[in-house]
Amino acid sequence: MTVQQRVKKLQDLLQSKKLSAYVVPSSDPHQSEYVAGKWGRREYMSGFSGSAGLFATNLKTAGLWTDGRYFEQAEEELAGSSITLFRQGQSGVPEWQDWMIQTLEKGSRVGINPELFSTQSYSKIAAQFAKAGFELVPQKEDLVDSIWDKSRPELPSEKLYAHPIKHAGESHGDKLKRLRESMKVVGAKSIVISALDEIAWLFNLRGRDVPCNPVFYAYAVVTADKAILYTEMSKLDDELKKILGTAITLEGYEKFSASVEKLEGPVWLDPLTSSAAVEASLKDKNIAILNQDSPIPAWKAVKNKAEMDGMIAAHIRDGVAYVRFLQWFKSTLGKETLTEMSVADKLESFRKQLPEYFGPSFSTIAGYGPHGALPHYRATESSNSELKTEGVFLVDSGGQYVDGTTDITRNFALGKVEPRHKHVYTTVLKAHLLLGRTVFPQGTNGYQLDAIARQPLWMESLEFNHGTGHGVGAALCVHEGPFSVSKRMNMTPLNVGNILSNEPGCYLPGDFGVRVENLVQVVQKAVTPSGTFLAFEDLTLCPHERELVDVTLLSEVDRRQFNDYHARVYKVLSPFLNESEKTFLAERTQAI
Image (cartoon, rainbow, N blue to C red; front, side, top):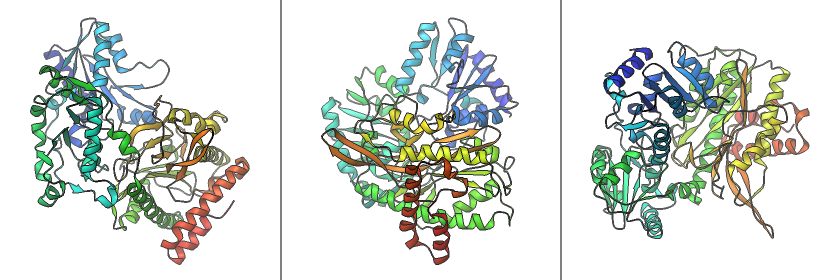
């Protein structure tokens, strides 16, 4: 069945149910960014494979909304589908709710699956539609499921595994104690935890249910005297049950919905991660609800010593693997046929040689030339470009290790490069260096830092349509909150122990793209009469591409910082390399 046929079938189904429109987000019942194939409804309906987006249709027309990271990719994947692409954030482009208000008559009934929207999002949508004279109609059974054929995947069934205390740094018992103390403070009798990474962190467990993210599908409920984990019981072996101990009650995933209705209120729900369906179940039973941010994301974002030590160790290993890959790549280019996919596979093979490596932390982005201008490009058999000895090649990749998570972007000069390539690369590098050396007072948020990072680009009338930095979990998800460095007005301040990316970029559609990315930790820089000041320290250890640097564009501060970073890369990584690899790295890290 083609995308057009699926859309037509859904539109026919709407008509039979007397609905005027339907909305299909990217999420699962846990409000996850990345989902298991079973919940890939938006991709199934639209054909768009990016991680962020929303599909909506009325009885005649359909649209796909996504952000600046995916404009070009979405345009390519929607070609021939009759689905209109709505570029979010662009002038004059309506959000999907506004589009429905503009295209539907007053009194229209809009179908929605409340499992797939957070309580906060759902309440805003309901209020907006009520004001417009629309009825928001929750569907107990998602309409997409009724047209999805037998190809719909089942949930993964791989076993869960323990995240040992030597890497977690804190037992699940101590974490539960902290959580119960917070519950007392806010007056909650119980708390429902839906976010998969929060559950994995709280119980010191990991899984393989979501590609590249070591999480598993589960809910958790914590009360003053109970901690209940709802997950697929077959995924827990006897050894893991013993590690969890008798203080943790284990129940089947399917039992969660019915158990919610029996909770004693007030029940603490995080409005960003708890679904509207869970909230509705509590309201139906007149159970008091406390809508308030969970403390877990902030706790999880501040890495303890064991977690930080693990992240440092993981980045050293990852750096060693990357240097070995670089040596192979530089010596092979122009001598053998290389493609985007074959290079990505080869990089993966070097990481796989490390015993602590579990798998990628996201699908590698390897974009040559015009494909590098697609920030979240994924090479396919049909798009897979052969690398030539000219132009720029962008590779964004990362690894999941037993003790840490990595994320790195590097750009490569494939032989002949032009002055414009060097100009754009060096400008992005200057933005990366500027943010990397920024000192800021405690209490500063990423929204404020984002403008600092973009200054070198803005001075050249250049810009990029994604965030400058995202939080990263410790042997967890490569994207985590609650903070970010971006234009979005996220006012959550950065704290010592946070780990985030530093990744400015610049993309020239149809030509080439550049992104320079390291992971950094937030450290205390100084305490003075003016207050406490914080700074960044690089975790990623890998040489930058010297051939793309226009030294004349660097300030003396830029040049010294660039050289100091390369000196540190060599000092830390060289003890783990053989003589040939050391010689190669010494050449790549020479001062400029």
